[in-house]
Amino acid sequence: MADNRRVHRYADMIKKTLSNIIEFKLKDPDKGFITVTAVRMSADLKIASVYYTVLGDEEQRDVTARVLKKAIPFLRNELKPHITSRWIPELRFFYDETLDQAEKINALLEKIKNDSHSNE
Image (cartoon, rainbow, N blue to C red; front, side):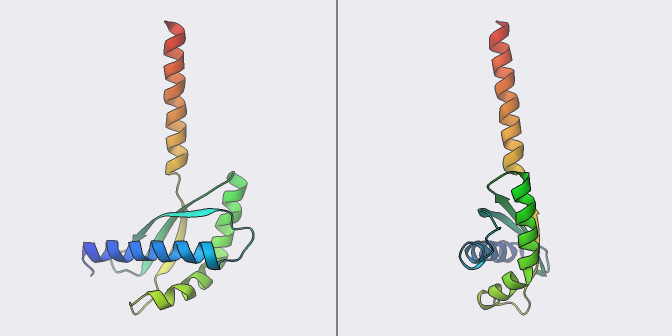
């Protein structure tokens, strides 16, 4: 079992490397503008949960999700030279909804602010 610092360092290295691979080496024209926001590793370092955002609407998110799922073997192969571990982690991609939720909260707060000003 890896210690916590090692897991975080490993996750950070995977995040940076995957970001570069997706931006510069993944040539699929449908991928969209992807930002890797976080990588969470399992304790045994065998599974990498990769969180990402993509510029665009829900349709673009769906297209990007399909592109990333199809590209997993390519991405794992491109990770090989950068990883010192015996195995390449299994990649699982998840859309990061944090920014969407923050926008909804800001819109609600703005609405409350405007409603309180109109009641005065």
